[in-house]
Amino acid sequence: MRKIKIPHTDLEVSQLCMGCMDLAGRWQKVSLTAEHEVQARAFLGAAEELGVNFFDHANIYAHGRAEEVFGRVMREHPSLRGRIVLQSKAGIRWADDPPGTPMRYDFSQEHLLEAVEGSLRRLGTDHLDILLLHRPDVLWEPEEIARAFEALKRAGKVRYFGVSNQNRFQMEHLQRHLSDPLVVNQLEMNLLHHGFAEAHICFNQRSPRYPDGWEGVLEYCREQGVQLQAWRPLAQGYLSGRGLDGQPETVVKTAQKVAELAAQHGVSREAIVLAWLLRHPAGIQPVLGTVQPARLRACAQALDVQLSRVEWYGLFAAARGDSMP
Image 1 (spheres, rainbow, N blue to C red):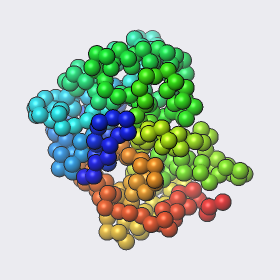
Image 2: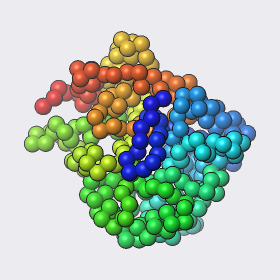
Image 3: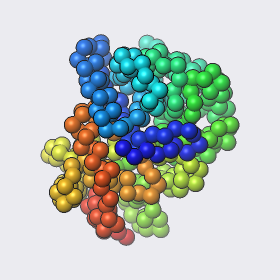
């Protein structure tokens, strides 16, 4: 698999990143089982087969079990940690943590330090390669975040830092208080969630599709050398085989267009959906949300597809339900 270098770092990572949210029962509150470990072994085995070395976690995934089961399997192969890049996220707190509290965001220094310690313990490693702030915290204090980042870096517990779901103004504001550059912004981007593309064509248009918040995000990240990552790049499977009952006509027609192109290129439907993202010149890196080995192999076919401009805009027009303005 092709490798890319994350700007401002010495990290060379696979062009596709494997997201670990679906490991260990996802959001169910259960205990880890032998079946979860079998799943994680198959997941990591598929990654090695495909040449993927980049894994995306969050301290809340499966209530911490995703990191824990990943760590268990990683400890079975002591040399693995040196061959992979680990990214995790922190800043979301569940309801009743502690009891009686609401679900909330928490970018306080105390919580960020505590969350990283928990991730390191569950993963069984002494450092994260990248830590992302998990969504924006309305009550954030950038000076406090900077102190937390400095403490984590000084202790050797986190090498690089980034954000998720932040617009350009939030990134600019935070960056002014940091000594090191942010290296990643992870955002929802796919054919059905295409505000990043819509923002380029809807300025000065009377359009109900105008995507609030996307103005300048891609340009800022490209100028500053921030790696763009796409979460939910497969649009929850609606374009690659999931049932379409009750879905809008635009989704149905886009799924049909994806199937047609998959047949023409001789690849999976997942490959076409991902190739649409990969065709963008911003160098978007998909974070795959599946842990199924067969589907991961189907996704990897995207690296062998180069959509033409006609094909790219054909998919975009189908997804937006209209021609270009």
